[in-house]
Figure: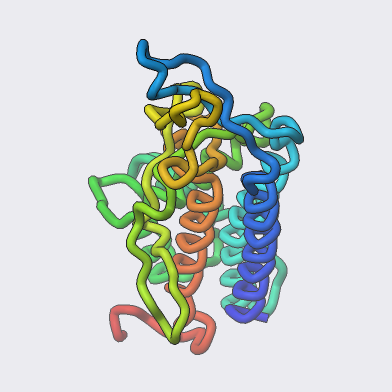
Length: 266
């Protein structure tokens, strides 16, 4: 047990992510999506419209995304339980244990007062606090962990993670890089998606007015119908959340290799 067990749990989160990625790729395949024209310009040389799918709204994708965030969130709480066991003769974590993610120092102290980090070394508590999103911290890991916790908590109380089909600039507009003979696109370089209710365009219309040439300019993508997250590809968002959890968990590696470790060197 220990950090290895935590990282194995992180791997399971990655499995959920892989399932999500495969479902999205299948859903946005050109064979399953179609561009519907809503309006033309006066000369009927340009058109605006939207993508739609022959297989209906991606309910399955919403559910799989929920699996990703629930699994990722549980990794953090599991980490706290493993830390407790490491420093308390292998004792199992208590129901009160959890990885707090809050928006103020006062709220963090309240969590400590509620025994969320009972029995955890002070130095490890300090690392946990360093991952909190307050005090104008700019590390994207901190804000992404907060997004993860908020999405997870919302998921417990209402139906969210509803996926919507929309569009972004086609991947041909992004310059790939080569690595070991393969070409890749950096996730951070992906363009933001169009709002899922916004018309897509303008796109060219063939001279006979029978075909809209959307290929090469826009690509179908899936986003969440969640405020503040609507312009992010659902797989990119899931990837960021998984990466944040992985980075956070690895910061506690020293505590598992030596129970007496002190970050201050004492």
